[in-house]
Amino acid sequence: MLTPADWETIESGSIQRVQTLNLLLADIYGDQKAIKDGILPADLVFKNPNYRPEMVGLKVPENCYVNVCGVDVVRGGDGQFVVLEDNARSPSGVSYVVENRQLMRRTMPHLFEGMNVRPVLDYGLRLHRALCEAAPAGVSDPQVVLLSPGPFNSAYFEHVFLAREMGIPLVTGQDMVVENDKLYMRTTGGLMPVHVIYRRINDEFLDPEVFREDSMLGVPGLMRAYAKGNVTIANAVGTGVADDKGVYAYIPRLIKYYLDQDAILPNVPTNLCREKDGLQYTLDNLDKLVTKPVGEAGGYGVVIGPRASLRELEATRKAIEKDPANYISQPMVELSVSPTLIGGRVEPRHVDLRPFCVTGKSTWVLPGGLTRVALKKGSLVVNSSQGGGSKDTWVLE
Image (cartoon, rainbow, N blue to C red):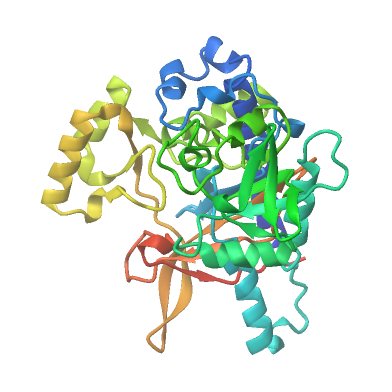
């Protein structure tokens, strides 16, 4: 449960970060001023596996690269909110936010009596509106589709859910074709133009003509249609360079650079192993720090020093020494806890919060967002891919 004051901080801080991420991506694929001015190291961008040179000079509607963003927030031991990471590629989990609220209203309606809880059930409408606002210039009634890898993907439930909530077709790459640099969807009535793709597949699978030649998930020629401005891909291709954990360390100074503001939601202090001092400090304090590979997501590769075995620490040390630029380290943040029903008993479990930010012509933040729970006692890893759960999250008016 979040008070209006707490939510105002989270909401305004999340919007500030999304604005910065979009300005950063427009800069990276445009004039690259932050790099030229020494704010952001060039090799952190150009050697990043998620940097897409195909995007240089390619204009996107409203200069919006990140239409949907998940900002992972925790409350530390001092009661202050800090950002653990930004998710600017294809953040997942929003279906649980809506489903949790629907389930709570069905099973425990009495809890809502006399409580002025901000709604979350209009997420699909809000997302669809933002995607329509991102349509190519001159398109007044855009056809939006959700591009999924298909039913074998772990998040397919969410793909089906969101397509239904938005009232749009759920498609795979085989359902579409590019002709004359325009994208079409195959239907029983013939080819239907597609103007906006809300994609839930990674860059490298989008177009076998440009990225992975063996991809069966994308559409040959899609990047040609994209480059011609005939279709919008949301989130834009190449957004992963902005949510890299190495770039994360520079977000507060980028907020100052682009917006001339201080960060409303600060970062966790971060040591970059690509820098000599950061590397030495990390290796000297490996058993006290949390180490993370910069390009991974979903909690994979994270080693919590104070809870790691000697074997894990030694393996981590060797991995860092072999490729320092691929790692960061941070102090261990003691996440706040929430009462959680475990085996018929109520016990404390660590939680974090992922507010979802939706951007078209402006940015809207889903009230509350996804509270993720580390169900294993003592665990700090809340990711669903690592066995985490979720909770309904109330923002009070």
